[in-house]
Length: 229
Image (cartoon, helix red, strand yellow):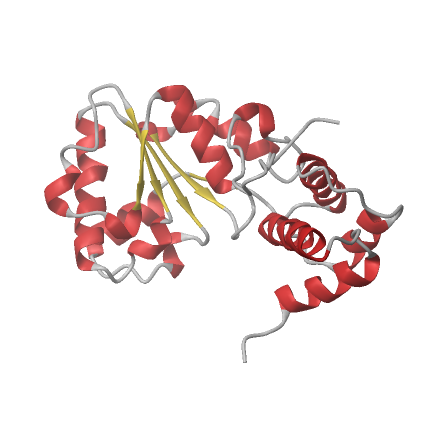
């Protein structure tokens, strides 16, 4: 089975293409990002929920093209001109967070125009469609609404199980037979939650010098998914 989402012992995920598992949930998004010549005006918006794999996909896409990656809330109009290179590429992550931030909205509008003038590929990532960003600047709102989109869907059970297997293996954690299938049936299909759960199990097992058990996994899963008080 292909691989995805390797974690090193420090707990930081590897974001290379080799560590990405292409599955039904993300195959169309991968294909879209691998064909930038087909992007209308060289622009694409990658949408997916938290933990879906947007950062991983955008990371190796940027690395392969020498693109700069910038967080949308950190954008300023003054810095916009220096972000887009002639015939280059630029990734702006968490674009949904720019909505309602005047500096970020203005910078994103400038970058839309600058990238077009400089033939610079522009990839945005976001959790939601632009209509739900709360964008105030009318010119930016109309452009974001018209931007071509590709989506990462929620992982299916097979993908979630494969990710859990790899995460446990990367941390050299032995788990009881059937635990992964048991978890897949009980947890949200959220790859970010999978990473947090495996990290918490590793930390707890090391601290207590005890093996991972179904009871421990259940307790930690309940803690991680408990609603905020």
